[in-house]
Amino acid sequence: MRIAKIDMSVNSSVRLRTGNEMPVMGLGTWLLSRDTAGTVAYAFGLGYPMIDTSSDYRTQPGIGAALRMSGAARDRIYISTKVEETDDAYKRTRFDLKELGLDFADLMLIHRPPLAGAGVRLWRGLIRARNEGLARDIGVSNYPPELIERLIDATGETPAVNQIEWSPFGHSEKMRRFCDKLGIIIQAYSPLTRATRLDDERLVRIAQKYGKSPAQILIRWNIELGTVPIPKANQRRHLEENIDVFDFEIDRSDLQQLNSLNEHYSSLGFLPYI
Ligand SMILES: NC(=O)c1ccc[n+]([C@@H]2O[C@H](COP(=O)([O-])OP(=O)(O)OC[C@H]3O[C@@H](n4cnc5c(N)ncnc54)[C@H](OP(=O)(O)O)[C@@H]3O)[C@@H](O)[C@H]2O)c1
Image (cartoon, rainbow, N blue to C red; front, side):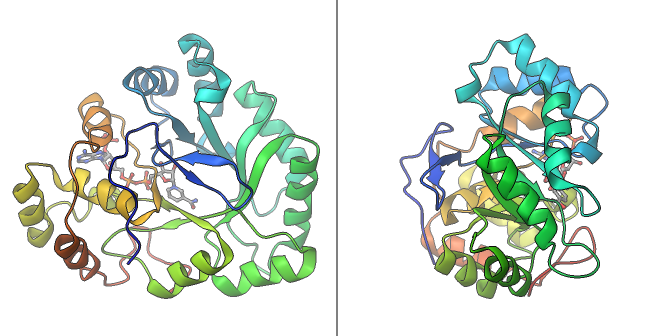
């Protein structure tokens, strides 16, 4: 079990294989289209250092507006976004940046592997975008180890990140070991199980012990293990709660208990790994 440093704050970061830094947590924006600009601006005010989006979430224009409204320095906010499996990845990157009103993204991901093959053409498009300065780092999402290996074999380029569903209820030691070996950081999506398992009584018991909510325990579990959660929240009280995870530590035995909740659960119905 890998345990990250405990003297962390919301401004702490993990180091990617390229040497660039990525914040230890961020805000997801899938289904956050009701008032994206207002919600994201509020999150910036709370200190959220990273926003995850995708052209198909329809939140990029709102995120761009929030960035402009908040006047946040570009180097203080980390933006990850995605290209779709049917896209021309290079062209889509340019489109995403236009919607966001940015010159570059910190991280561009392939949203999911195409139906056939590993997506080598997509990957080459992202490599080109990165080489031209449109993205600092590039990575994948929903990729199993075999398909990551195929991208590397075809191009010599290892993804910096694999964004996958990841929580105590659904994770994989095999995937973690694979990513550790290649220096790939796991960005944890649906880290709150889309709120479907927050009432699990074993989780609730641990939360009560620390005087924290189940959601805060799920977020902190990721941070302590060096995986990077991007919980989504529309409601302000959730946004506030989810960033308030830097004043406690989960002890080793509780981390182990949380690990033992694993049942390869997916709130979306599939995990691209076991
Ligand atoms: N790459 C991919 O294929 C992929 C797939 C899925 C997700 N993602 C990314 O990961 C992000 C997060 O995943 P997700 O949106 O699927 O699910 P999630 O973050 O696990 O859960 C979001 C749900 O939890 C609720 N919630 C948030 N904070 C809470 C709290 N403190 N207490 C109780 N409930 C709370 C939210 O409610 P309210 O909104 O009402 O506050 C919302 O219903 C996405 O937004 C997206 O950026 C990527």
